[in-house]
Length: 159
Image (cartoon, rainbow, N blue to C red; front, side, top):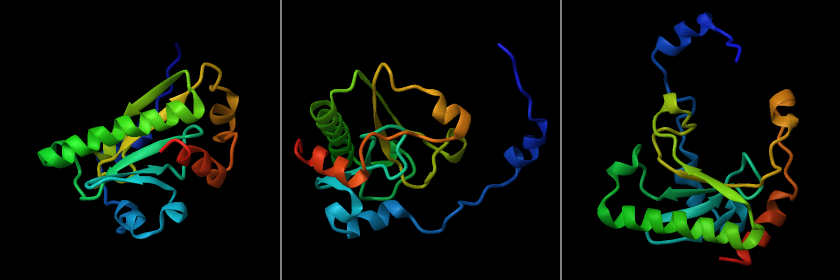
């Protein structure tokens, strides 16, 4: 395996980071109508929404309504609800799209890749044996086999 070094990035890594955007889309999304926001389901403490910048077709997010930066900051009721919604999201995608597997997880903290580090959320990413190709590697482009609004309608059939 070859290694590529980018020592020049150390200045960026060590510098104090301000959050790029002062608004929190996860707090704004629930104010919209479900179809407009691509929300599939709302529970008492969290919601399931399609990721507008998906890694794969059917990529969902589970987001607590309350803004917390770490899942450990949710109270017991919120935590139980959150994990129940993760399982519900996985079931919806399983029934609607029949993936071969899943990547399910959270990026907690900006250095871990969290795009919105102050509001924890869980990614549910369906995977297929043949879903890796050259497009994301060569051209930073993802190929999605269905338009977002059509995918929302398909997933809603299984909510």
